[in-house]
Amino acid sequence: MTAAAVLWALPATAQESTSGSNGADILGLRGTRAQPAQQAATAQQDPPPQYDPASTGAIPDPATAENADDSLFSLPANADDPFADAPPPDSGRRPSTALRRTAARNTVGEIAAPGPTRENLRAEAVDQDVNMPVEREPTIDTLENPLIDQRAERVQAIERLRRPHDERPFAPVGIRAGSFILRPSLEQGMTATSNASVSHDGSSAVLSETTLRLNAVSDWSRHAATIDAYGNLRRSLSGEDLKESRIGVDARLDLDLGNELRGFGTLNYLRRPESASSPAAIAGTLSQPVVQTVGGSLGLEKDVGKARFGIAGRLEHDIYGDAELSTGGSVSQKDRDSTLAALTLRGGYEISPALTPFLEAEVGRRQYDQKVDSNG
Image (cartoon, rainbow, N blue to C red):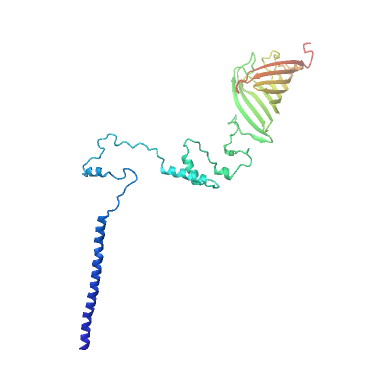
């Protein structure tokens, strides 16, 4: 019983203490809530200062604001002005970026620095006139690989070099023999003619012609040599009986002496039957006598600008064979053997690479082996 009374009395005591504290807090809170009311009364007595901007027109004029129409369907103030949409005139004020660049340049100029910075150089490049020429920077190759010799030049690829023009692109390739290229050939044909012997009493015949040719050309870098040899054989297949042969050899050597000066030499040999139309032909022969000619020449050629000059000496010796008569026997023709010596002068002018007119003069003398012929 005593313990229950004590426990019952403890809540009552606690409630009283709490109520007492709560009463103190309520008084304190009431005092705190009364302070904002006092501050509001003080603010009404001393209003805060108004904002006064430094620039004119930063805030609207109170008189104008009171008269402004706040309707949604109201027109702007300059609705009747035809030039309202025109852009405002340029004030001529420099942009802030330009001002900052100028200030940066002045600062860099005042401070003793070892050199201009990248930002200053870019700012100066932008401020310069766009029409000023810009210096091209060198390529990376020239910086990494400088030329040791200024005269060194790049050489084109071998595949792109021009090949020399071939004057005879369809000519046979030939057979190489030492420093010469041989081009042999064999020709076979038939000829029908009404005068096989080419004489005043000749008759028709069908002839077979066989020709063997040999051409040799030197493969030298500076000088040149050529040899042309041929042999021709003619036989009658029907008609007039004819049998004759021709043999010829021509050789030439060209020397490059320098300074547009050239030298040349030739050798030639020809074996042929004498023509029946020759004024010295002997009548009544079984066949035309054989004539052999051996000759050679030496000369010089000189080019002076477009002028062409040349001089050459030539020797030829003719040998006539015996004529066989149809009645039997033969007639000697040694009294017809002779030697010709000639000197040739030549001058020309090159009008174009394909046309060079020239004037040539020759003087010579023929010397017979026998001073007295067969007729005395």
